[in-house]
Image 1 (tube, rainbow, N blue to C red):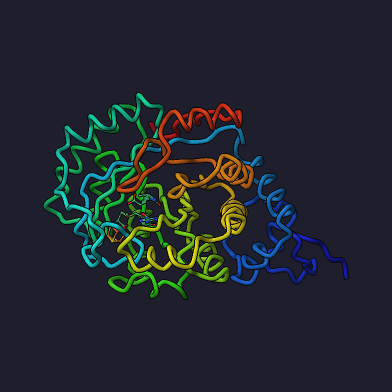
Image 2 (cartoon, rainbow, N blue to C red; image 1 turned 30 degrees about the vertical axis):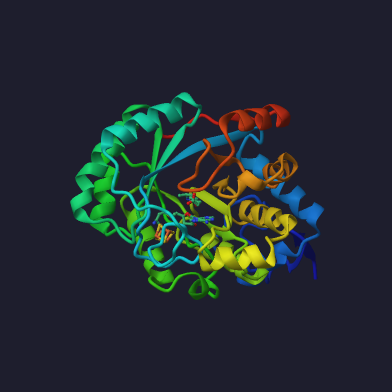
Length: 347
Ligand code: SAM
Ligand code: DTB
Ligand code: SF4
């Protein structure tokens, strides 16, 4: 029987579950099996990075990296118990809760972000779900940020179908809602909402015609199978995420998962790069964002991530509540690696 190799997985020509796209492994597929995704993780590292870099080049200019900037518009006091999060009211992390910012202050921050070189502005709120009473204020913020010529993104917890439509009508381009980890490990991370709750909000976002930003966190004590489970869940969504953030856990004192990692040590950096590479392979057209955790990554590590297919970062000295490399540091990184900022698609 004639056999061929796709990402090193030997396939029988006519019995292959991936036969429809096997001729061109850079084409998006939605029929990945968990075993296939795990097999990608097990590829020899150099092959994996080469394959991811090859697919990256099929869809993107590898010298371009998108810059997004985050702002916490409502900090702390969150009703969810995500075991990694500084903002959960369930853990004593020393963070002071603040109320929702005024639209004018948010728009001023967006202006500064644009002046600093960001092309997308993401507004984050420590909410379990959006409350209808806050929607008008958010609509004003979103419209104001959009009017600056920035792509708009928000992450506000769970949404109903109506709320998603209202945000879209206000000018919201992207909605961030992460699956965080694979379905098997999910209950170790959060118990106040289900995987299905997250999937439902993502469906409302897609139905409203917004682009999705959906990814997860690596280094929370999960297994490689769990990381494959996350990427399998993302790659088998009805539509692949438009943006796929890969966060490295920022260990926060006082959070259960942060405390555990502070004791046991962080994930092997090469395993993190593997996760970025597999994300690029299974969601080839997504913007793969090297998200939280860059503060402690060396330039060499970040270069490997860009080589493995990451093409987006958060810029500015702060993520939501934790530090991020300052502008001048990223300017040096871009110069060192001959990278240039990507122009916005939606603005
Ligand atoms: N409350 C909303 C929600 O959870 O969807 C929006 C804000 S929440 C902080 C956005 C995402 O940030 C989370 O889904 C998680 O993936 C990421 N995140 C939060 N804390 C983190 C940490 N300590 N390290 C890495 N990623 C983190
Ligand atoms: C995402 O995946 N990462 C960002 C954004 N989406 C909202 C948030 C990272 C937060 C890191 C921890 C903090 O600063 O509180
Ligand atoms: Fe709340 Fe979001 Fe933090 Fe979870 S990740 S505790 S939902 S702010």
